[in-house]
Image 1 (cartoon, rainbow, N blue to C red):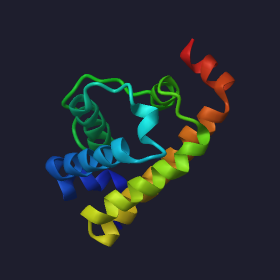
Image 2: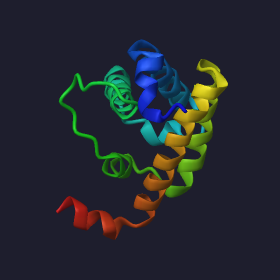
Image 3: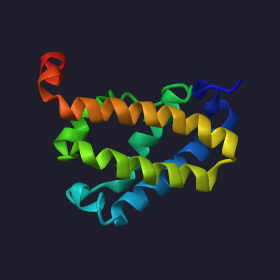
Image 4: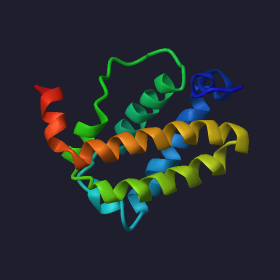
Length: 133
């Protein structure tokens, strides 16, 4: 059985990076999500950073020194809990456009868990305060 940690080896870094880049191109032009990220000036860096995040999460070796704290970043941009579902729908469409169904489902199962976590963290800002102190 394939797990999300197997995907880096099965997909390769270039393919994961391509999926992430396409997704963020879609986010930029999405009427619901795009305005939330209007202040982003360096989309290439966002794509590189998030591509690295997914690469590591999907089982790849770290190649950048970035530290990831998704709920803090999403809060910085003013992402609201109700935007998580549109984000997930767009991510699902992007992943399905790039990957065979079986591998897409493995990645999407992981993304759904992350989306649930981010939504919960955004709804509970006081619980984040304790973690950030």
